[in-house]
Length: 278
Ligand SMILES: [Zn+2]
Image 1 (spheres, rainbow, N blue to C red):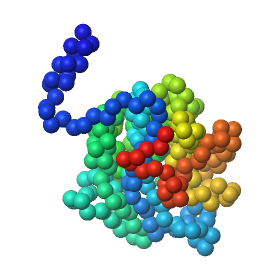
Image 2 (cartoon, rainbow, N blue to C red; image 1 turned 30 degrees about the vertical axis):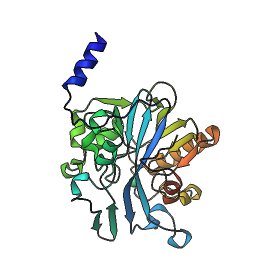
Image 3 (tube, helix red, strand yellow; image 1 turned 90 degrees about the vertical axis):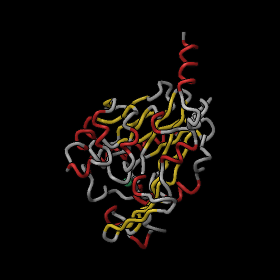
């Protein structure tokens, strides 16, 4: 019965169907260059410009591929709809410039992972530099903390436009403890609130790289790890400091590498799609 259903499904597909990725044998992470944020004021993060190599932030998007399914983690600062042809996009908002070299979805499709095939979608948090393409993943199962979801649909409607289709997505409201996405301990969503009410980070156990913590905006710059103050405009600064302490303890205990998402040095040393980290 199962076999005949599969044959039927294959026959029903048009002959120009996109390439589909083969199942993987072990965990891997694809990083996509989803752009840059320039012109930021480091005092917002309790840092001084003269102490920093650069105030530029990189914006990666991540596709986690597990033998049992896929998880899209953070989906960019510029929506694919802003691109015209092959030209990069740059947008100025006062002194801050947002840019992206190329759209995300064609890169996923080229790897054999069109958005409709992605099992889970999750964001470190709902800010616009992490959710630009969120609506493309409305068919995936959304992993989100209740407090984050509530905040997302309480802000002004125009701020919801990047993710409003998720309102009706199949959703798992996460506990304030660890959530084991594929049930084998290799992909864990960890609660780390403060930056936003339901901010979360992602702990991976990669077969070659070892343990990794993809830290969302718990820190924006490496220098913040030695500053004993939260950024100025957190949803809850005390919570941020408690989450930072908990994740520093996790890093120490697990020996995990810290991948600060916006840190160009981290991004530059990792393999980028179509290559992957394993
Ligand atoms: Zn951010």
